[in-house]
Image (cartoon, rainbow, N blue to C red):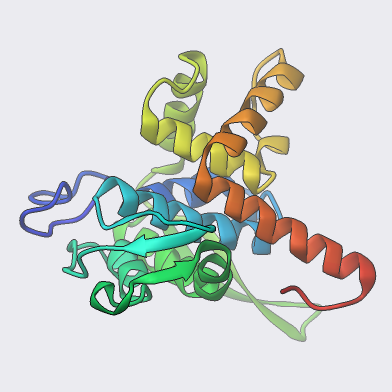
Length: 228
């Protein structure tokens, strides 16, 4: 976890990547500088991971009917988390929003600040490229500081212990919800591990919402319509 907001668990010295940053580190293909999974799926996952960190900080809780119940709007002192916090409705005016709507509406913004933060850390270098000489796209090349290797090592360690830590479970659920589990090294018994990860998605209200938004997009693409 990272940040330096006084009075929060992110207070004091920088403690390393937040949950959304760690998910992005896991997802990046070091050779191609692009996500291993579908970029739109990853963006939804990053929004969900930011929400999970806000829940851990006591700033949101699960409301009724698939809603986010917002709490204190005071900043946590972290670029990614404060960006997410700033998109939530005012707690004094009801402070609720459908979690699926929030994930969909904030995904691109949170993806962008995660990229900014990893660049600030020295973990990536943002490079602008053109496909076929025409279409501009961004590549996240490896930076001077290797944070992706430690992120993968932590994930493997958490896998070995069955994701006993709540933060590890939240990350694993989002890995599965965004279909990143199809691309990561899950060991020999891959099928059993993926089955366990799917169970984590079902047990986590945020990961369930991320998975539902992705499913809506897939259904809309299959029918030729827009996601809702």
